[in-house]
Length: 70
Image (cartoon, rainbow, N blue to C red; front, top):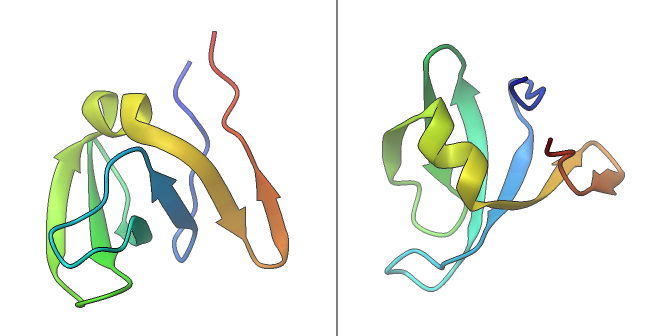
């Protein structure tokens, strides 16, 4: 079962980006997820399966939680 993501969620990933931040904002959903780095605004696309393994926390508005994995 895929992790539920929404546009504008902020994801904290396990490894930091080259600019030093590990926070990414979701801008596109589908089989590939579009992410924008919160530090340098770089945009990348990652396959959903690969991204789901790398997520530490999800921040939606004021609420922060860990993804539920099966």
